[in-house]
Image (cartoon, rainbow, N blue to C red; front, side, top):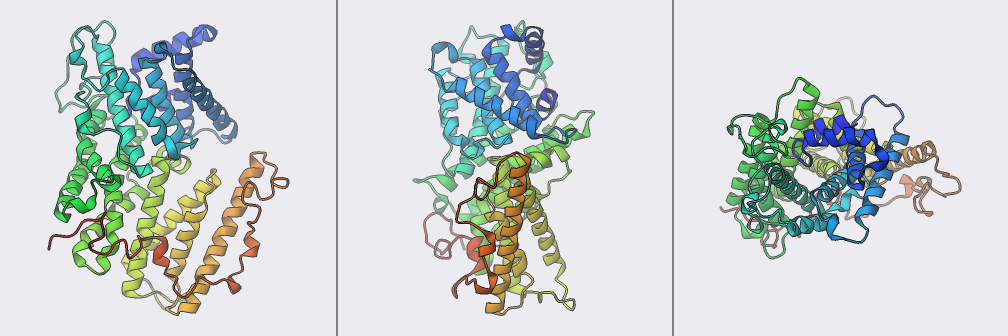
Length: 503
């Protein structure tokens, strides 16, 4: 599990100096009782993160339970009285590992932006926002560790801000720390007095993190524009959005050249999938609110296309990697939100296509959907599969699966309003029943007493059998689009928060 973390996650998120960590690791196992608390926590968190993508285990319940206990221990230690000796590189490494572990193991992973505030301020208190060249007595290895940690904190912060719907904690004006040096870990140690950097064209252990650090500007711009109060998307023209989008998509295309090639295709493909997700999700967040405008204004077709392209790439990354696929099905935070935004973008596009071309008769063998609709329906089925799998793995929010089920049914029903509502109600009922049964099975498997617990942790008033589609009414003004698109009055021209096309 430790090896899995080191080879998979120490690419974009550089937290450890690998040779030093392996020395500490061996030292720990030679005498665990005498090891410092910081070292013990680092090893436990590294193993916890690696446990999620381990493929050779059939029963993961005990492993995940132990991993979560390690997270709680680290959180308790960090929550203790703040002493000056706690403000150290080792402590900061524990904080960064914990932020990542909470998202990987889905332990409060959706609210890590709150905790990142402490991480950022701790790093700034230690001076990580100033480049090591300002500290003349600082060793080469320590300086490199500080640059890597600062770049990792910036990346974690911008990703968490995007998910939380808030501006990033930091801007480019808040630091002068340079990108990590283009060196392999084996090239530096505590005795190194001068760095021998590789050319920028040479791929090293730090290349991918350097690449992400250098591509921060457009992604910070997206997060600020999407989530800021004084600055918003309405402050920029649509042409400027095209420039931002082009910058990020070009970054996606050139990212592969900065991934260190190894003898393992699994490691390389994991890095490719992770890097593509962390970049492409910004394009999706930027254009999904605008895609619906293409219904009435063809000038917004660019947003419609970019939203769909990003969603399709996020839902089904290429090349396929089993470890990464399990990570995004199990994780929270940035790993969970990719599923929500991508699947809703696909559903929105499918509903617009149905509106433009008309539905295919439900249970009809005489009508065949177009090739484009078949592609969208297949993507939506994949989103439904992933949503159902997340519920099997422990997700308790069933709303996404219900929404996607209703969207799929909408593509199959005739254009009769009352009949359509009946089919949508039936789809919602079937989804709720399936999800409820899955959650119950999961609770029983994990030893939860669902009988005494009422409904396995759900509301006491909830019972899917009480939801009768024959007597269910969605209301005459119900529009399925409301489940997937921004309200009509929000996307009308002139409303603050969305940019205007320069005609």
